[in-house]
Every structure is written in C-alpha cells, then in structure tokens.
Image 1 (cartoon, rainbow, N blue to C red):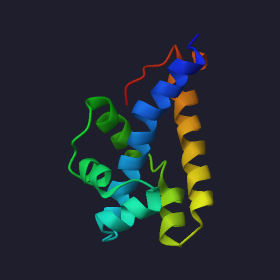
Image 2: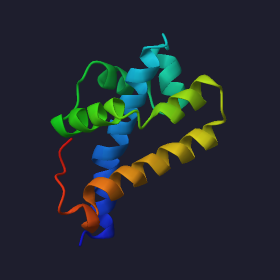
Image 3: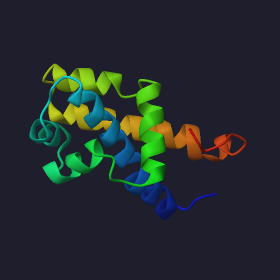
Image 4: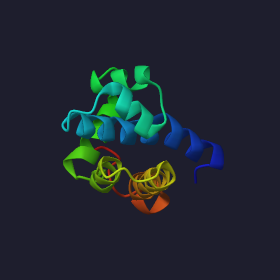
Length: 116
C-alpha cells in the first residue's frame, strides 16, 4: 500500500499537471490565450506554455491524452468558459485528481494497467 507521501507525490508530480495540461489544451481550442488559461488555473504563463508545447514528461503526456480522449475535463472546461468562481473550479480539479488516482493507482486498480 502506498504511503500518504507517495500518494501526494503521485498527485502533485503527475496527475495534477496532466489535468492542467488537458484543460489548457482544451481551452486553447476556444482561443484562450496562455495568460487567460494561466489565470483560470492559478498557475503562471510559463507552465501553460510548457503544457501547450508538450514540454513535460511522457507520463504526463500519456495521462493528459487519456483525460482529453475520455473528456474527463469537459465539465471543468465548461465551468471556466462560463466564468464560474475559481473555488468551484479548484474543487472540480481536486475531485478529478482524486478520481484519476483511485481509478488508476489505488489497490483496487492493481489488477489493471496504469497506462492509458
């Protein structure tokens, strides 16, 4: 069983960046600028540039492609486009990270592959 520290690292180093990359890529389809995406996600423009130019690890690329392919970020993208408060968007991102962690990395998922 993974320790709380291992879980935290997996979420902050892989899952959260993949979620942000997927959201950034989807918002770019609606002509959002890097600055506007950064503001919506609470990160700096440099991070968004990396997400949009695929300058991140293979694990993040694979997971963000999975998120986009399965439209797991659709409600978050819609909320951002609708101008929902950042607190609601942050909560939705947290819930998506939890869902991904549970479905791909929890003990219940051990029999499944962790690849997209």
